[in-house]
Amino acid sequence: MTAPPSKLDRFFVIVTRTISLLLLLALLAGVVAFAYMWWSSSPKARPGAVKVEDKTAQSGKAVVLSFSKPIKVNNTDTEILQLTMDNAAGEFSYGRASKTRNILFVSGADKPARWLFADHRNVLWEIRQLHEGAELQDDMPTLALYVEFAAYEPGGGGNNAAPETLDVGLTRPDGSGFTKVLKGVTKVFSHQIVDGRRIRVLFQRDTSVWQANISLDDFTVTGEREIAKLPTAI
Image (tube, rainbow, N blue to C red; front, side, top):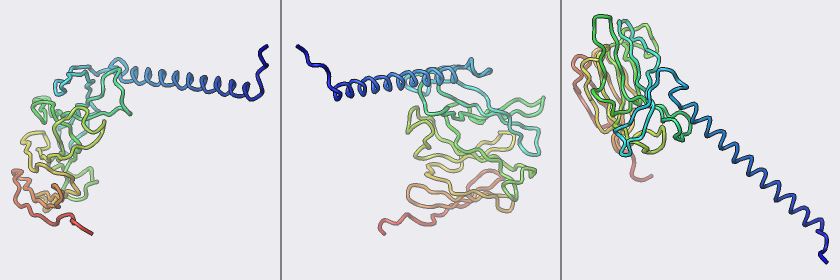
């Protein structure tokens, strides 16, 4: 004759069923969250976007491209549109992980539009209009555009992780004359306009801090000096 279950046995049965129910609810919540992310990243959810094959990736995975809102270049007839890339529908990511792959310069009606890069194989990490005087004076004329960029590395270091090294470039307000002025930069600490004729950049390359002066007339580096190295011991 089987003995009736004890109170302790009944307690463990209740605990086991409760844990199973909680696991089921967590699984359902995960499925709902994944379905929402898939839907929200779909091109149909964002009119004007297009899903294309990313040929910079070895796997040739699909990504979603779209244009950002236009940004006016101060005291010019030029606007810039950022070409942004998102993960394609159905691909998991923390957040949107949007990346700027290029910039389109759109000027007056009689002028052709101009891409910053001939292809879309870079990621732009910083885009700034350079003004003479305070950086926040948006009514000041734009002397040039400052960009920090690096070659796109699919899946490298997470969705929004900065590259190990990047390059710095300058271009005219209408997108012409783009020039790469600094290469292999680990980190940019500051950049400022000096005398309205040159930009001074304080940056790190490897373990050394450098300072460079760059002419705004022809985007040539007129001077570069090593300031200090990181200590090897403390």
